[in-house]
Amino acid sequence: MFAHEFIRNAYLAGTFIAIACGLIGWFAVLRGQVFAGDALGHVAFVGAIGAAVVGVDERVGLFALTLGLAAVMAGLGRRAQANDVTIGVVFSWVLGIGVLLIAVLSTGSSGNDGLIVANTLFGSIFGLASGQSVVAAAIGLAAVLAIMAVARPLLFASLDGELAGLHGVPVRTLGLVLLLLIGAVTAEGTQAIGALLVLGLIAAPAGAALRLTARPYLGMAFSAGIALGAMWGGIALSYAIPSLPPSSAIIGLAVGAYALASMASKIASWAPVNKLQGPSGVEVHLP
Image 1: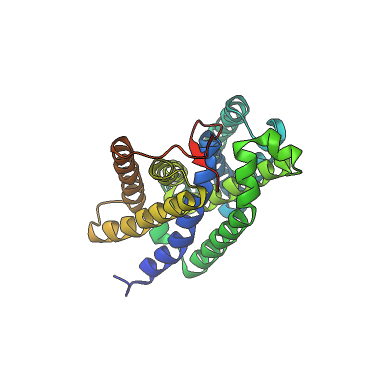
Image 2: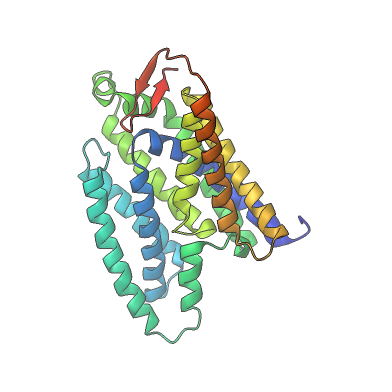
C-alpha cells in the first residue's frame, strides 16, 4: 500500500489534519461551538467556489473567506464566542452567496467546474500532490502547536469566563484565536475530507473523548487519538475497498468511535470530584 505515492501523501497530510481536528474539536464541543465548525465548513466551500469563479487558486479563497468570517463571527459574539444566532445569520448569508457563485460557475465553459465542486464538498485526500500534502501537514502542525500553546488559559476561559477575566486571562482574545483556529483547521480539512464531512472529524472524536473522561488533557489526547485512528483506518479501508470513498470511511470510523464511547459511558461510573461544567453542559475535572 505504501508503495503508492498518493497513499503516502494522504497519510502525511491526514495525520496532522486529524490531530488538529481532534484537539480543536475538544474545545469546540466543550464550549458548545460545534455549529461554528459546521458553518465554517460551508464558508470554506463558498470560498473555494469564489476563487474558481475569479480564476485564482481555490486554496486562496478557501482560507481567506474562512478566516475572515471566523473573525467576523468572533467580533459579533459575546467575548468573541459566537452564539447560534450569529452563526446562523452568517451561515445563511454565505450559503446564499454560494448558490449565486455556483450559478455563475456553471455558466462557464470549463470542464473542471463539476470536479472543483465535488472535491470541495467531499474532499480528495487521495488526490493531494506531494507539495499539497506537505503544506497541509505544515498547517496542521502549526494549528496543533497553537492549540497547545493556549490550551491552559483557554480551558480556564471556557469553564468560567467571568472568573478567568478577573484573573487577567484575555478571554475575548482567546475566543478570537479559537475561532480562527477552527477556521484554519476546517479550511485545511475541507481539502482532505470535504466541506460536508469535516464537521464529523471535529465533533465525533471530541464528543467520544468527553464521554470517556472528564480530565482535560487526557480528553484532548483521546480526541486527537480517535481522530487519528479514524483517519489512518479510513485511508487503509478505502484502499482495500476501492468503491468506498476515503472521506466516508474516515467519518464512518469517527462516528463509530463516538457510538462506542456513548455506550461505554452509560455503563461506567465516574467519581464526581472537582468537576465544572462548560457552556455545553459537559462536566470537566479541574487539572
